[in-house]
Image (cartoon, rainbow, N blue to C red; front, side, top):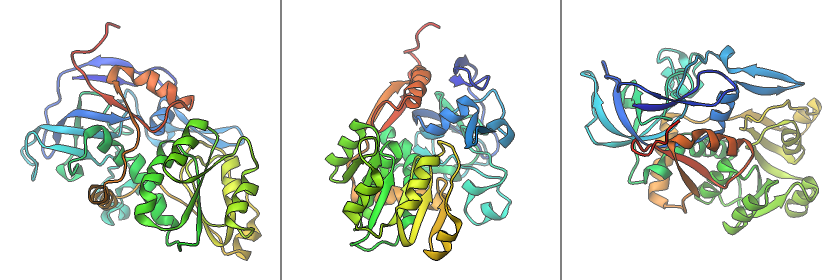
Length: 358
C-alpha cells in the first residue's frame, strides 16, 4: 500500500510504501477510491488549534500520535475482511463513518461516538484515507453510498455531516425568519445545498472571498462581502432591526463569533462550528436578557449520516463543486486550503501507477 504520512507536526507529509494490512477479527480492509481534504487535516499537519490570547491547543495533548496517515472523508471498495466481520461483501463500495469512539462510554452507548472522550477517529487517532488502503475496525462503520459517486459521497462523512448537524441545531425556523451563515467555503456550500431541503427560512451568507460569494449567489442566496461593507448593517437592512433567528458560524474565530452573537434577535441561536481559533467575547447579561442560546456543533452521529445520505439520495440536490487531485498532491492541496484557495471540496484519488519519483 502507498500512503501519505505525517511524521512530524509542522512538516510536509511523506510518501511511504508498506505491505497491505491483514484484517483481523471484525476489521475490514478497503481500497480507497476517494478521500476528501478537510480543514481538520490542516490543523493536524500544523499540530495545533489557536484558542485565543496567543495560546494554542496542541493535538498531541489530545492524544494524537505520530506517524499517522491523515484523511477522514473516505469512500472505498471492500477488499478483504476478518473472520468476525458480518454483513459485508467483497467489492461493495462504502462510505466510512470516521468518528469512532471507545464503544463503552455513555456517549458511545447513546449512539454519539463523535462525542466520545476517548476517541479513535480514523485519520486523526488511527490511520486514515490519504492512502490507497484503509483498515476499518468493524463493518458497522461502513455506509451504503446510495449510488453517489465516490468523489461526491466522501465529503458527506465530515463536511456534509457537519453542515447538516449545524443546520438541525439552528432549527426550527419559520418561513419569515432569517438565518445567517458565516463562511461560504466547503461547509458553507454544503449548508447552501441542504438549506432548501430542511427549511423555508431566508438565508444570508457572509464571506470575504469574491469567488465563493459569486457561487452562493449563483445558487440563489443573498451573499454579503464582509470585507467591503459593514456586515451587521447589511444584515439588518435585510432582516430588519431586531436581527436574525439563528447564526451558524463555520469560521468561528474571535471576530466572527462576536459578530454572530451581535446579529441575534431575542430567542436567537448561535451555532459555533469552525475551528479557525480565537476566543468568544460576549456581554454576559445579554444572554439572559435576550434568552439567547450559544452552543457548539461537532460533526454528527452515524444515524445523522444515514439520514443525510437518504435525504441527498431522495432529493438529489445539485452537487458541491469538487476538484479531483492525485493522492500525491496532498501537500499542495493542504497548502491551497491554508491560503483559502478554491471553491467547494478537494478530493484525493489514489493512483498507484501515477506516482512521480520523489
